[in-house]
Amino acid sequence: MILQESGEMYLETILLLSKELQNVRSLDVANKMGFSKPSVSRAVGLLKNEDYIKVDGNGYITLTKKGLATAEKIYERHIVLSDFFGKIGVSEETAAEDACRIEHLISDETFGKLKEFLSKNSL
Image (cartoon, rainbow, N blue to C red; front, side, top):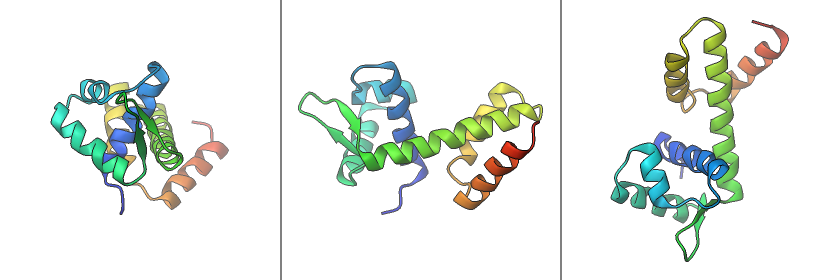
């Protein structure tokens, strides 16, 4: 199954929350994303079934190796794109919003070339 944008957003959110909190629960994800608990519960179930996350008996969510790799990939794209947009004069808020949309659509090839370009050219 190919992970959709919403699944990637959940994984990225879980990654960021895990850097802030000792334990991440569905309620934390719902609060951070502004989604209802039933919506998050459904997404958590799908991500669990696809082996992106594990949920223990206490309801604590952890990323699997597969989930962590995906979350880190999306988060790296967000950071690089936001930084690039900021360097070319886009406001911080707009840069973050645009990066959030583009990070899910940009191909591995294009993103790799963008990173290569940025490493060779200081903006």
